[in-house]
Image (cartoon, rainbow, N blue to C red; front, side, top):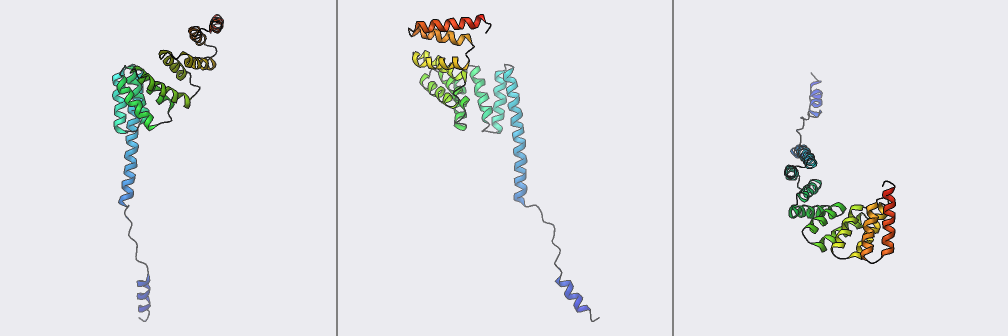
Length: 214
């Protein structure tokens, strides 16, 4: 009986059991957001891949619809926007192509291909000066890309700037020295500039390459 006060004191000194804590609503919400984001990205990626397949099959309208579906899920899916722009371009729909390429370079200003594609769309819309600026940017970012120099050379010729175009033809020959047409095209331009001996040499070398099977 005398031990009762001690037992009571011991009982009241023990820590009360801690009930299991419910997950914090904020943490659960964040988890759901992440899961939703993953699901959205997966759907967008699937639509993008389907768009690429349609593009390769020459189904332009179907490809555009798929890329648009991807962009409706993720607005800044830049690869999908670039792909849609290229599809519009191949369909000769240069205005919507330009709109997409403009958005691409805004989102990825260091994307040389985005600037190049924007330049091509501008050229087809007869905005040659703006197109030239875009080709210049693309070449500044990737100076050893053959297609960029080729397009700029052709544009400069169309703008009657043959001397500047020659620098791009020189680079084309340097990048692909075993391609006969590069030498022949440069030769034609040299002849226009009255540099006949150099033109003759390019034609001679081009002919030798063709005879050798290149």
